[in-house]
Image (cartoon, rainbow, N blue to C red; front, top):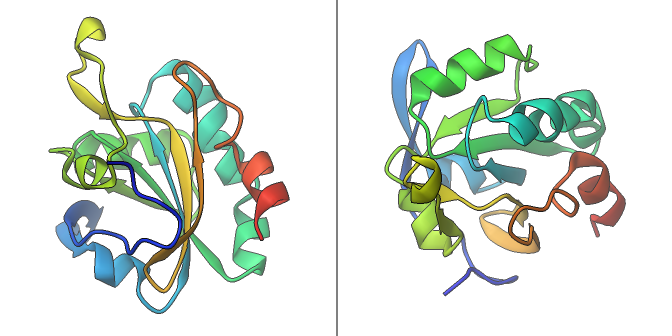
Length: 159
């Protein structure tokens, strides 16, 4: 079942790189703050690298000015996420987190099977806005689309 507006974010441990690889649980990421989590099917893939993450990089300060933390997630390892962020010059504060085993992706019910592309289970392309660990808005793309989870669209439609 796909997560719904009003649902709490499931408790899952993700990985990120700061001073080495560290574990970060979803309560730490979400509780007591406003968070825009967007997910991409894969770092370094065309739409993700040319449009999705760059849009959030370009509009990062617009989210921050509203008091919203921005987190990018993919079913990739934390080293790939770090390299991808550096390659695209993600600003300090825009977190890139690894859901390497698709634990959060599956808990949200937003996984897709990309085995046909040699990529296994991946996250669907989506954006999720949460306040204090509760989903307030959800923007899930239709397969192969990139519209409703873009930074511009999300900013325009945040309540």
